[in-house]
Length: 176
Image 1 (cartoon, helix red, strand yellow):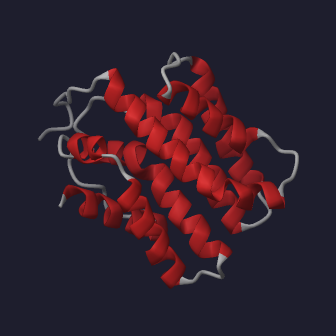
Image 2 (cartoon, helix red, strand yellow):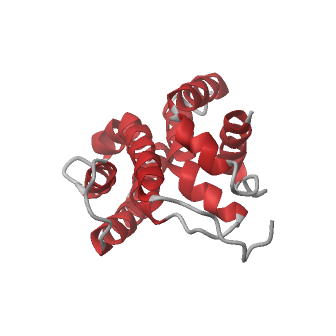
């Protein structure tokens, strides 16, 4: 599979991915909200992903809200809150999965799930047991559409630290 090979995607698949990503990110949103009360950026990103998943239009607002949540991650006072905001950012960005056969696109499909797992792990004092449980939950909640779409892309790329490791773990499990 070459990087220039195009992947066939339909809007229903993109909506399923965005819905899953929003559901993942919503699980750790309280971590962000407890640390940064009154900052709507993560919630707005999740809500925009949900609106798209529920049949809304894919507009530039999704991209803008994804970037706002990404900036919220940079502003977050704790690593766990930052990961929760990154999960929200990834949820909104998931609607813009590119139809190119690039392993980096797996981050659009599973990025929110990976950041969610890491946020839960960090919130529990970097407890790998909590991370393992959160990863198992993320895998079990994934709709079958995710495995179908992942099968069209190369496996998740190497690197990315602990979040990359989590991403590859979820990717491997869903491809089985």
